[in-house]
Amino acid sequence: MFGIERKVAETAQKAALFSASAILAMIGAGFLTAAAWIVMTELQSELFAATVIGLIYLGLALIGAAFASRSRKHSYPANHKGHTPNDLSPMQLVAVSFIQGLEQGARAKRAP
Image (cartoon, rainbow, N blue to C red; front, side, top):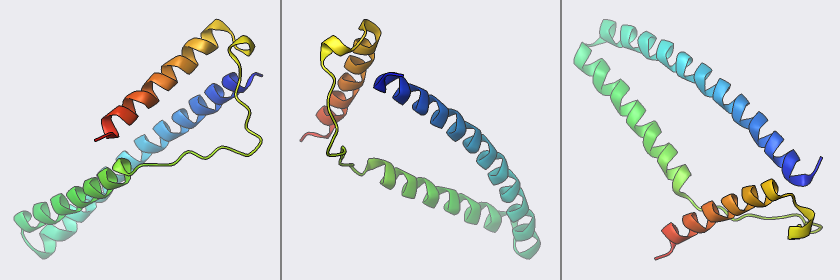
């Protein structure tokens, strides 16, 4: 397989596994939230339970947003060789151009 095709296949596989994992995590979070609600309403009031669970979810969302907003430096292996336009099919050129456009747009948003 060509390098681009291999990367697309790997990315699709990772996306499928990530999606399945995310669905399972959401189901688990739902059950854990229900269990926490039951325990906290037995120990305190419903208002206390709602406040604690809401603050936990808000804290996790803020931590996730902080991780998502940090910039990453891309490092390539020392033997990384770029493809020339003559090595790629027209569809591969479209895919590469699309990815480069997304990267340029992300850089433009970060620039002051």
